[in-house]
Length: 351
Image 1 (cartoon, one colour):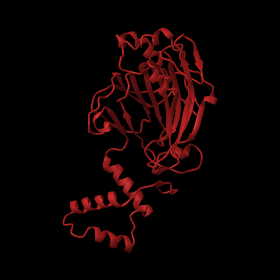
Image 2 (cartoon, one colour; image 1 turned 180 degrees about the vertical axis):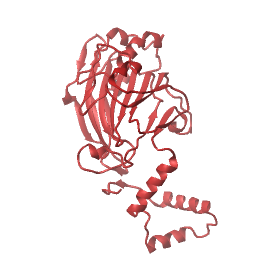
Image 3 (cartoon, helix red, strand yellow; image 1 turned 120 degrees about the vertical axis):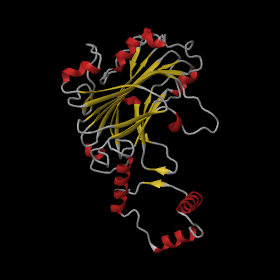
Image 4 (cartoon, helix red, strand yellow; image 1 turned 90 degrees about the vertical axis):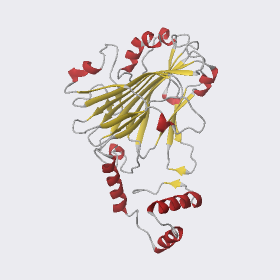
């Protein structure tokens, strides 16, 4: 029932839509998501999409769009403020739009004064991370909230360069990598990850702990748009600060989609969710060895492995009695864990 009744709605919001104003979502569609259908849920995510356009340098432009229906008072309290984490050394984030779809059918488009950018709370790691929050204010069961967010940069490394787009090119230039979680703490009707990749880049990917529907296609010109996007006159291109997601001319397109995602069950002392729940791993490096060698050489060139007599003497002392390489690994690991307290601070370029 859920999939069939919401098919038209999911097609509508799956498209690369929404400009500075949020798209209007019909109230009767949202009414089909009810507390009766999801008795154990405080909220239900109607749609969660991520569109990633990779440049030849490895710089990425990302458009995130999410619509959430509030079912309970607890869900309303949990979502009156929605936060997005980012590291200004490696990513720039801008909220394009936020809207509340009230249960009475009215739509409130939030003013940018309700978007707040501030230093993220930190403990033990002080790298200057930030959060940008949307203050939705008072919500009621039956309301729905939508956010459309633009991000440029990357996720899994640090970099310091001049304050322009070059700042957000990954350290391993010309390569792209990502980890996409397809598990959720709340029900999700549909989650989509779409990737636009330059034709010269070769993608390696693997979906773990589950399965998703997927396809790929090479776009030679804008007229082939209808091959992978259902055409509709009501949808306009996303004109983000520096990018348009509707016309990735000359790119290879990949997409993964999962429907009716249920909260992942937890068990006592279970392994990390990243090890057992559905996830997608992507990389343009051919092997992990290639990435590891690059990373080793970066550290070697910078002098990260240099040591002095004091360090060598202490290491010899710790390793006294170790007979094998694995003995050494075990002893050193335990000594570091038990004797060193880590406090992460930015050390500037080369860190």
